[in-house]
Length: 318
Ligand code: MN
Ligand code: MN
Image 1: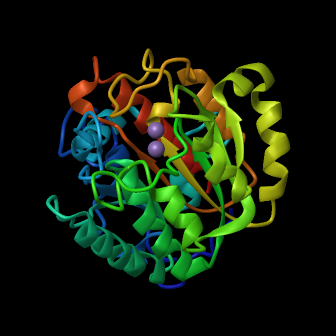
Image 2: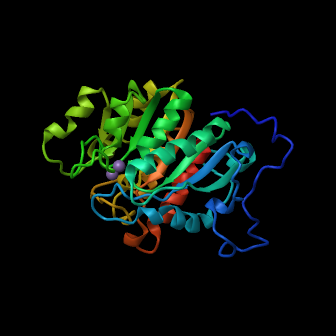
């Protein structure tokens, strides 16, 4: 996507990662990709934003520490992408916006806060890449995106559809955001795609919501069979539309990404998810997020490292 350059900031030099030949990568205060911490969204084309909320988790907790650990592991990111042939920091003004203010004790209050704070960023004409946090944060993000862009085409990388209803009397959890996004009309009908679904569900009825609402599904098994070509055929519908991308790290196999809330075996390898994200190149992406990194369950920080690289790849799509 080509973003309009901001007149106000055109003369300022682009924010750049800290020079690793002056300050080695293990030094300094961690920010996403060692970019400057920029709190004025009008200075940015793309804001990298942490949302450290995991109050929607139903199994393993911990994604509240996701943004912090992904920042640390993003220290190895270098600017040039030899596959997509782009330096995103050269093309765009990118910065670490910091973390949103959330309420760790209330999902409803957190939802209000996220929608409001993201609204301010979007109104300043900056695009958002949010780092969770559990997947419950998707709903308030999409509410903000919808206010700004109207209904969006939707791509979800996830082992789970997240179209379940309430949980223990609460309407919201990390298993519900897509259901409410559809019911609230935040997504363009007929333009939603879920990739990487797998694992046991309670019954075949669990896919009923997606079928009823025309959400296309590529299971992990189908992806292993049909690969990127299968995905690209589905993506034809997304061309020339505003597209929102959400990436739940559990789409990746726990052998590659063990640090997550609800692991499912049989998922993507690191290489497969990198290719799948790069296959979105050319779409008109208006926002994205990466969620469900749970550092306490990680081994050798490999999940946070993969997440950091995927955020960089998502950034390159802009
Ligand atoms: Mn999910
Ligand atoms: Mn999931």
